[in-house]
Image (tube, rainbow, N blue to C red; front, side):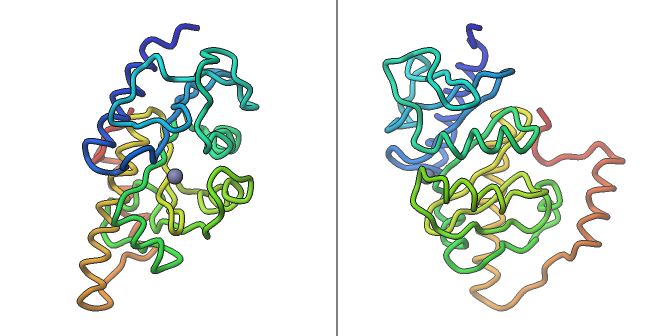
Length: 216
Ligand SMILES: [Zn+2]
């Protein structure tokens, strides 16, 4: 398997996250699953300057099967757990400022805008655990039940999707919702959408083929 298209998509997505300041330095990591192989960013990668030859290929247990020059991201456990427990084809993890701020304040980012319906409504916050550990992986997996995005307290956010573009767009959507939440909360309690309202939005979106983020 040569992964040529996936390598280009992963590098473009990494550059986009860095360009939009959703990661700084060596923070953040991305992966794409193709059948029983995972193409993933290397440990210590600076996403702004990532190149396709730095990517690593592992199996679904995390064993490196190609490109032995680099070690996979320290969050590989998290990526693999998401592939095992969901239908994800791609996973993105970033350190966006507003998302982290909200993760430090609340246990759940409420549905402050109707587009939250597209990622499962309110976004749960996984408690802080040391990066790269099974404890963090377990906490995030729990926060992702019936959701496609989660916040990680004092750390960042994670999202998955059919493609790496969709996973990254979900990271951006969570960051935008977090910014709205912070602006609202600075003034008062603010209105949030309940489950019934979110379901109605999801039904309307499905009927009209509407999505503010691309569906890939
Ligand atoms: Zn991280």
